[in-house]
Image (cartoon, rainbow over all chains, first blue to last red; front, top):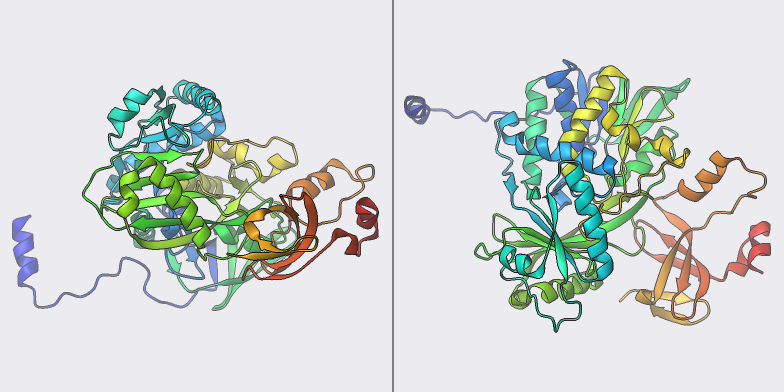
Length: 413
Length: 94
């Protein structure tokens, strides 16, 4: 529309357009209160407003929009999990991610680059063959690849047989992708706010009032609000918030550290991970190498970084890509991961009737954002648990039906 | 380098130790029902603040307890399991 552009250029004033709710007072009552304005919280609000016509929603966050683990994850999207429940769930998420920019009318910079997981042992080859079979059976593109194919997929990977742990093979996942993680939260929040959802940042939940096994109100640092129901989507603070509602969760919080190097020309397209070396990396569209690994060795509610972990990550990454020896670390950070005993999330109903859980996202939360928004919104609107998330109920621990997700983290076997 | 003071071996690099989970008294498995047992196994406090937890000095396989602040990562004190006040657990480790 060149004419529209000319008209826009000739205007005298350019008033700022609010994408999100401008600062306003809390109302006395909301139909739905969502605690946590990260990707998950905003995605649930978006789906409720757009597809279920529920618009009297408040999304509360003690910090700012997308400022928690949504900003701290390493933006990996994949569905090459091991359990049928996990593969099916994340497969649907990847499908939604592919169309997310069109859905929003807002570019989330989704890039389908593929993901390569490296095997340095016979045990890993066996496990990858298993994963590939499960994935293919469920319609996810995964295949076992040999050293020659790895050399073609990632020409600058060190395939030397003289290294400490020579690479024997790999699991190639053509559906692996990445996206701008902040934009995912912004896109959902923008779409939700346009439809009447209120986003309240710097609003910390301090208490949850329950009467007769139901939530009646939520108290915050900005006042008390009554609500029809509550959804908690607070990742690292899951235990603390659930405790306010009198709910115990099987979660432990561990920091997960990551870092990025200075930018380089584009030389690495796929995402590469090595469970054996506990490291994974890819090159962002800005050219920086983003490097992550396993969680810290003991629990902590803190996002501090340690030199120990930086050394371990650097040593591992140099075994794979020796040319990075000259690279400088630009930034480093950590996120608090809410780990469950079976490496699967806790989604759905809770012991409190109108209180819904979206927790236990450990190191697999970002990639689940779109499907989580869809299924949790279905649950809140219909009060029926969608089949896709039934296996992830909190109750599974009492039934001894854990979903042992051995393919959960990019740095796990 | 972060230092943990082992009651047996003195101050050592924390890399020499293995985290062993939160301390909480084990219920009598003859007396509890399966829900209570599940809660003992999986549903821990995960508290933000000072907690008591098990640690093991890996090289010497020596298990002990530590009081640690899970917000600041400050180790308040370490002590042998024999100092536990809980009488049932005292029997277990003595």
